[in-house]
Length: 288
Image (tube, rainbow, N blue to C red):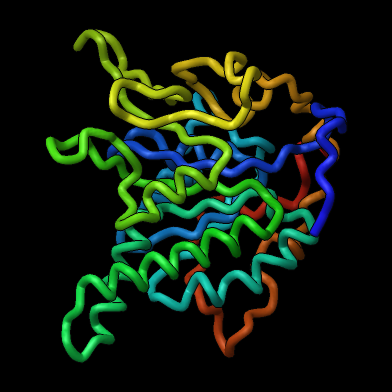
């Protein structure tokens, strides 16, 4: 248990926020997530959203990385046990300052993986029981990852409004769709808008509800500080809320070669596949 000081000044220390972003495929979710400080991405290997993060696919002018030259760490999730086995490996990376953000890309595909695994273990198919077990698994996962003390970004596909469910929301099975939304600081709806065919597409991040699609935050009266729609990066978000981004960068410990790779695995071989998306960084932006 810890006391939370509501009077502490904000601005020069990195805030720890949790996010749930939802939108269609290629709406910019992973590109936005990749702009967060020192991200470690838990990526579904079948969806391959991490391809956006590769150096050759990245556009630093549109979505600049928080620290130039510091590429994300990407661990590919292939089976049910991977995330649980990865968490003990994440903790020392967080403690060392190498990881400041955990990204789950995406919770929609991860839910499919777990649900299928639960069904395969049943002798007689019981879909209702599988959904219940999935809900318990996702709840426990959310609690563990939020407990790591860093930024967390859950990416999800958007479930579009239907006649019997007119609300557009993150595509997460069962009751956890609403519980994930209630358990984060920010819900963003991402959408590609192109008013005219002759104009370039606009990758918009809606910080407030757009029609039937949910979005919002816990900022209270400070919510008015956020652009809507917002275009840009994590730096855009922090700057709009009054944080000193340069001071936050300078407060980070240097990234060294020793902290780029995962620490010693808990098993004989790493439980998750490490996907390289960029050259290992050996200096922080502040050190340049």
